[in-house]
Length: 95
Picture (cartoon, rainbow, N blue to C red):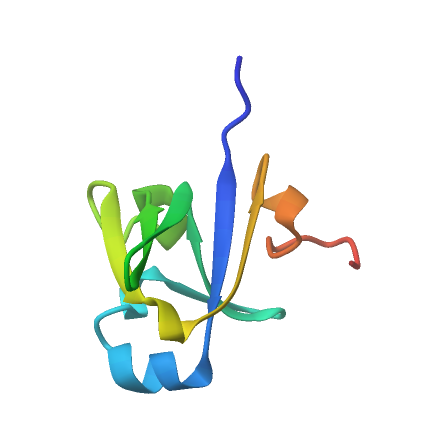
């Protein structure tokens, strides 16, 4: 079985001020700060496209969604084999 890839995208403070409430269903606020989990991301022109699955939002959405976020609002992005491997997941173990 192939490992499922996970990504996390950290947005700038300004992005939450400008894009909220549009991105609120997709944002996780955990001890490492606010970020968006997804299945993949890529830059397409002036946008950072993040594919988000329902399970990464606590089932707030019913089907996968593509978020088109202006690149100036992306602070950091990381990709890993699973949510825990990228260091943003909730866990009892310290980082």
